[in-house]
Image 1 (cartoon, rainbow, N blue to C red):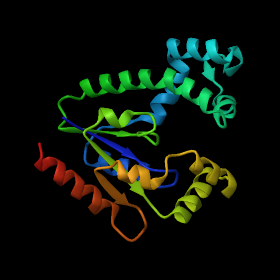
Image 2 (cartoon, rainbow, N blue to C red; image 1 turned 90 degrees about the horizontal axis):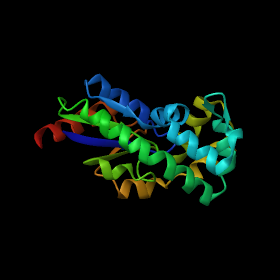
Image 3 (cartoon, rainbow, N blue to C red; image 1 turned 90 degrees about the vertical axis):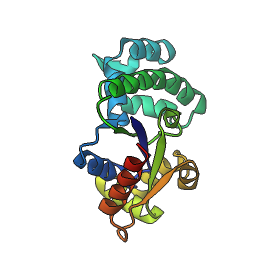
Length: 195
C-alpha cells in the first residue's frame, strides 16, 4: 500500500484535490475532521486538555475550539502542548484506518498541517496543492465568510508554501490554468507504475 499525504495552505484547494482522489475510489482520511472528532470523543485527549488548560474548555462532551484557539494562537508553548496531546492519538487512528483498508493499493491522508504535525513521516509520497497567494485569500474569504485580515493571520501561522513544496514529492497547481483532474490522474498513473 502506498500512503499519500495531501497538504496545502489555506484556500489552496486541497479538499477539491482529495475529492478527485475519492472519485478514483481511493480512500481519503480527513485528518482535520478526525482531529476535531477525537477532541470530543477521546478520553485521553480530554483528560490531558483539562489537566493543562482547565475544565473551562469543555462544555458537556464538546471541546470549545474557539476558546482553545484563542489560548494557543499566539503562544507557541501552549500550541506545542496541544499538538503533543492530539498528534499521537491522530497518528494511531490513521494507522488503524490504514490497516482496515489494506486491500487498497493506496490511500490518501488530507491534512492542512501534514508537515507541521509530523504526519508526513507516515506517508510514502507528499503532495502540496498550491495557488497564488491572492487567489488563496479570495477563496478563503468567500468560503469562510471572513475578512482579509483574518485569512492573512491564519496564513502567517502556516508553514510557507515554498517550504511545503520543498518537502513534497509532487506539486498540484490549482491556479485555474491547469486541469486538476489531469494532474491528479497523472499522479495516480505514476503511483500505479511503482506498485
